[in-house]
Length: 141
Image 1 (tube, helix red, strand yellow):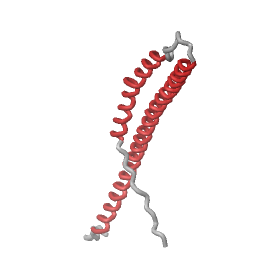
Image 2: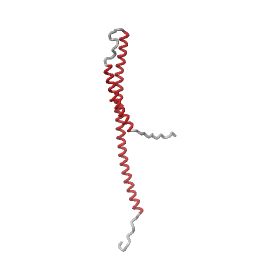
Image 3: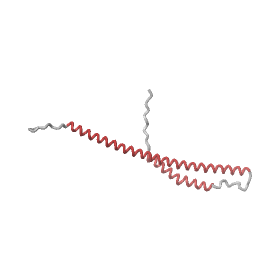
Image 4: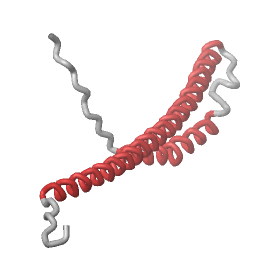
């Protein structure tokens, strides 16, 4: 008979995720986006060599460099979108885990209240069974 597999416990470090998210957002906003904007502006004119010299080799080289610059712009835009998307995904993950933790904590509190109530009732019942009421004594019954 195969061994029954038990689910592994998953632990998520929300503080670590928040830190990674903040670092990624900061790096994207302060470094990547401004750097790409500057690079796009500086490369907007494309290759500027061999403009006066209309030889086949020069035109081919300029076209190759322009093709590389175009691909670079596309790659840079893609990387920026990926970084932004990853930041949003990390924000959602942190929010979802925090919400789940809050719901679980609230549920645990509800269960704890119910258990305490049940224990109190059981203790009262046990005390009443331990000390039965004394029989009436005296002349009047």
